[in-house]
Image 1 (cartoon, rainbow, N blue to C red):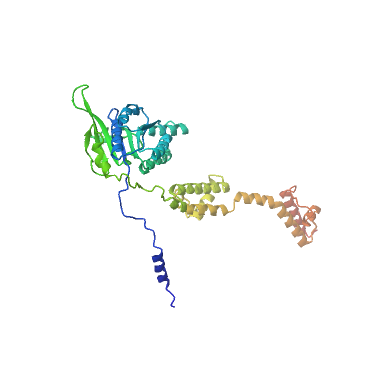
Image 2 (cartoon, rainbow, N blue to C red):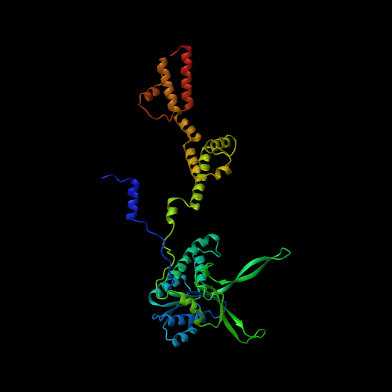
Length: 422
């Protein structure tokens, strides 16, 4: 039987074990309502959140209790509404971020719906706790690298949890600079946002803004309505509409779009690109390596030539020129980190003039003794008794001998030889 060619074997192997596909047919996998409601004081956030929760509970024929994480005692005024609807209401009163995470996980197991009122208090508590822990009075740019990932744990849980969540938050003004015809800049209000982490408004699939609108303009007091604006409806059923004193029905088109009772699947946050950074250094790691290499280069040069001027400076510049091809420090600083580390290694291998001088001074007595003994042997001249013993290995230490004395001995022997004496 003929041997199969490698290409045929590879094709056959690929047919037997096809590669796993990352893509699959798209379906509606949003099975839970994720709502955000923002507004200023008295705009009707808590009331509207309760109406949506009660209506959703009845529409979806839910059985488990409704949970209410209360940061501002708003639940006390909603208890009659839930009692009237014969819906069990359970609560926790806290503003701690750690309690928020625990409540969401517990409600996911034991409840049908969770109302969070207000997320603004919890965000503020997280920031205050961070400042207390680090004992800082204000947050700096680098602090957000620690705070943001911690907050993201909640947003990931908010979106992916198998739980209907209605989240209320206080409104705050957005500001921006505008420039008039004279070039004068003025800070103006450009809109509103939820008082929480800056990207919180992106998470809900249904984002609502409440406002209190007077029905009789120009009069103090009078009547008003709680107006609800639909800022975002991902189902695009009620986008841009508004409703006065809304119950549950205005939001039913969005709810009907959801895959209630079906499969709930969101972005897989467990997948990451960490392995990319395990294989090679990130930008911050490369910068750190470069700084270490530059400091290493400077230290090695200073150990060899401590002075900042004169011959020492010239010697240091010569080394830089030989190793890096330039003695301009600013040009060396921007070299690739591999070149810097390689250069530092080369400099370390260069002889240290200071150490060489010290070693030469240390070895001078022994070298002179050897030179004296060799000179005496060649010229048949007698040497001092102590040198004879040293040459025969009977004594090792020459620490008591001064280089000047040994040089004098050698000089005398050389003069004696020139005169023909012994």
